[in-house]
Each structure stands twice: as structure tokens, then as C-alpha cells.
Length: 115
Image (tube, rainbow, N blue to C red; front, side, top):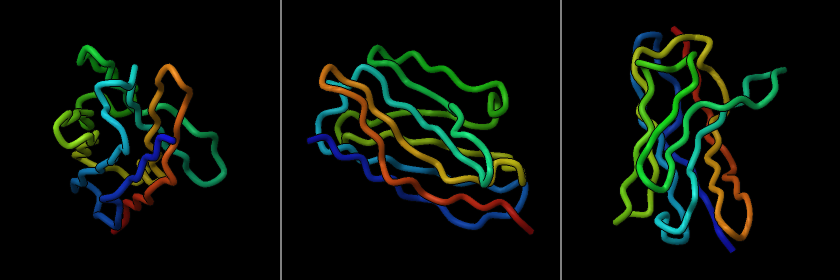
């Protein structure tokens, strides 16, 4: 069973930075893709960023230039560096992994951007 555990969320002022982590219970080299999604109150879950097994990344237009997805294969961890945070980035952030055995989600971590 693949388990994903997010951490690093919290309260930050507009313009600030946070780094989210997603620890995976199996080798992330075996995962086809690792992604971050977010869900704001009253809204649908939306795509934020993904990193493919080959290292290629893709970011949503709303975060491009501010957020960066990366991974550390040795630590089986995926990161989301978030800079220049805005109030509209407030949401629960989820990590998702896709492998040959299925799709896997973490429990989420809350990010609140407020002064």
C-alpha cells in the first residue's frame, strides 16, 4: 500500500514563502507522476503542479513563476516551493502519486495566506 504524507503547511503573510513536502512510502522512482493539487473552501480541487518520472515538470498558469515542484529520489520526497504567496493561494494542498498500481492521495496540509 502506497502512503503519502504531506507536511509544511501553515499561516503565512502575503508575499511570503512556504515549502511543502510529500513523503512517499515507496520509491518515487516507481511513480509515473507526482503532483500537487489544492482545494479552497467551496471550490473544486484543482491542479497545481506535476513532475514526471523523467523529471519534466508542469505548473498551472496561476502559479507559474511563483511555485516550483521538485523531488529528492534518495528521500522519496516531493516538494512544492511556494514563493510570493497570495491570499487566493489559501487552500488545503494535496499530494498525488500515480503508478502502475493506481492513484494515491495524501491527507492534505492547510496553507493559509493572511495578514
